[in-house]
Length: 528
Image (cartoon, rainbow, N blue to C red; front, side, top):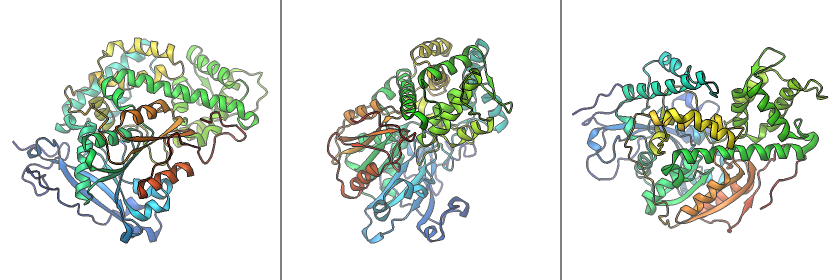
């Protein structure tokens, strides 16, 4: 039976670009000139290095006759084609992050030696952006109506009920409109796509760098195809075993990573003294500010902008991804604290515009894509997470779960309890085809794992677990804040380049430092 092609862009069986039913090698990718608007900002001498393509992969790799979906790719050709090692595939995380343009950021992430020897390949995974998108809504108005009923930080019974009803409606929209792609959005599906793409570029083995959620994709690939890997780098790591076996506990521990990061940031602020405007009992001041917003209500800034607890929590969570703007965050925190402490001698004030500007600069790092991107044209974030992460809780139990997490993790517990634990129990996929282990298949070369001590979104302990769970891995620790590190530390960048080009790994116990530490004058908080 032919599938309808309008809803999600499926190519029907028998079409020219449909996947072959046999196990023969995939056809090579046909590269062509990229649309001009995709390369905006590149210098003229770089433009010839770039090419783009759409490539068909099976909707269901076990049943290729069901038709195909398209994967959008961008390639930056190696500077030295005569010495080219192969292709280097990149994934920015999310899940649901668009990796299509990631080769354009290559010089900000990698040393020149990597750009000389590898074609950089970015791609939008299945369901995402330029690839066949997974869409749950027919119109933006429908999406706005549903999402508009979700509170950023549900506190009252009314906010909780409205958010739960909207999440249920979201799942029902997906069941009606998303089509057959909805059943094939697991990380295992994406890893199998990646292996097809590896063959289609002519590489015998995979070279890959994955950030954040992209570390799960990398770990899944090396365990599905351990003999097809050459050099794999994972930066900002998940705990694959926990994530694939217990969604609630994984998210609880992930939430604690934000608490660890905030606590360390406030301690670093105090250590900086005059270098941080919020110093002088920063932890106590932050708790007082948070509790005021929770118990007394919002703060109105001088320009009339209202800041409530949800705004504070969301802003701080985002800034923890980006230590380069910690100083600006400190100014905002001090100004808010001044507003509830009129006797404060600090003269710092901020406007709503400054708060919004800070929100606009956070979680937009060199590579990682924020995991909760507002709806634009696809719904791949929950589609992947709710396929991979098993949730056995009931939606009606979320308010109690949020209360419990708030007691355990006062700054972020309630905020993040209303993420996947609330959305996934009503997601309309009940039997996804996932890979949930074992994770210890041995590869010829070690997998190189980077972990920041104070990474909020993927806490350092996750990197340690990733390195232990993989069959052959080497952990490089980084005394750094922020989410992911490549492109932000000369030490890690040298190690990554040496590994990619020469397959050399550093000694056990290696610790790197970022190029820039937050807050001038603050000592490093940890040395081992």
